[in-house]
Length: 194
Image (cartoon, rainbow, N blue to C red; front, side, top):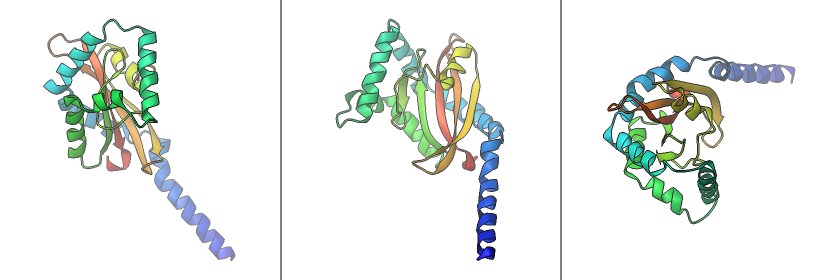
């Protein structure tokens, strides 16, 4: 019985040390940044992304914070509802199809992808996000809010639904015509796939 307990404890510790490095340090930052500077850079340079951002930025130019909060609340309530007109409209956009196609091409490395406008609102996405407004989160604030081309790699977290360790990697999107930051993109990367 004592040997069995020792063996069980040893296996538990071995499992922990195999997983812990991804959580305890920044081993994922360099490959995630490399992914952003190569793959994501090509995604955000596409006409699908740039035109969708320009269009939504113009459409949302006059939104107040209370308008944004109301839109976000509608989105959140739709994630739990049978009828999802707002979510369906965003998922039906050309940019969302583009992001789904790019995600599929990564063969499981990218678990989600979404583009945000200059207010932090979703423009397009490959999967349904839990909220519509990302403007209060680091992924948007540290990319769009920096006013220059920036990559932000977040901490590793366990996705309980898929039992995978992921990190969100975000990048500002610069309009090549003006040099201005016009939005941001975030992808969830399977860190073990890096």
